[in-house]
Length: 177
Image 1 (tube, rainbow, N blue to C red):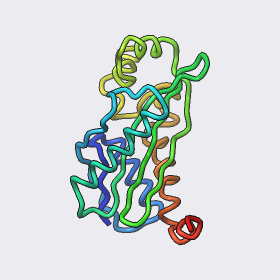
Image 2 (image 1 turned 90 degrees about the vertical axis):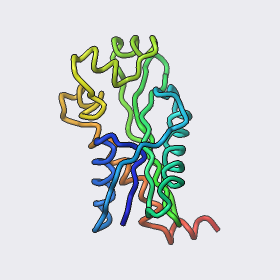
Image 3 (image 1 turned 45 degrees about the vertical axis):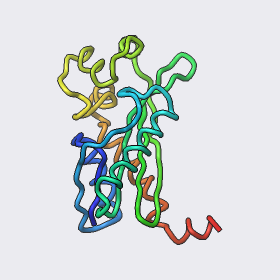
Image 4 (image 1 turned 180 degrees about the vertical axis):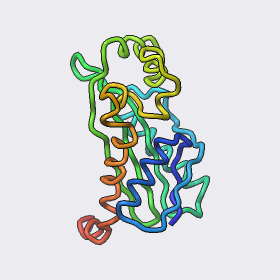
């Protein structure tokens, strides 16, 4: 089974591999550079989902021979006083597809201030936590949980959940009638 992740970010590739291997054997997962069509730092739930959908669709156009295409887009959204971080995962298949969102967590005021100044979350984290390329490692969630929960772990669960309509294809087809 060939799975294309619409990113070369090793965290997204690892999470996709882990999620697919929960349900399938002989999975080959590869990352590819694909445009999201949204801002580098999506600032709403809607924009983040659009980015994940665009990534998956663009990967499908670029690599039509694959079995599945996965778009993962991290974003933030304001809720009351908080700026929440999360990601959307979109899995497209030839016969079925699924979407899921990760759990959310609040970002600290120092990070929020930098995002408000126009920084991408990953870059803001690198500056504040004095790290390099943290978005390709444990991410904001890892930095804030002392690596008790990493970005790959957060994304893996959402990939598993996005696969629900695919692993239960008959059930979802019946409900669409």
